[in-house]
Length: 159
Image (cartoon, rainbow, N blue to C red; front, side, top):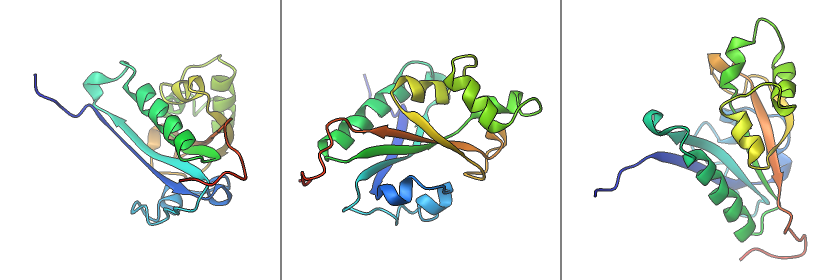
């Protein structure tokens, strides 16, 4: 049986000082070039995950997240951070703010096909990022998601 691409994931290393403050996708990725990669950084930034539409809901994105968190541990990084789309927000945008929507998803009262998976992976919402990307379904908002590596030791050098 031939191999085929089912999805794609892109990440880079940066500083937590940069990743944890409010930013846009263009800012954090240096206009999508990943020129903001900093090999001395303490944070793995998850810039993108894509799964073939016919293969969604099969746990592929979850596997990408497992690998990303494993990579952050292996590299001895302090954090994994990502900006997360909110595709379900579109249906609620007339009734609530993006922050209210995120709060409802975090509380488990609403389901968002992206954010709900990220929360199940142990990521936590630090804030809502306005103007993060051009995505009408998300109202151009994203969540700033953070996972702190429980094995991180400040004095240990990566290698």
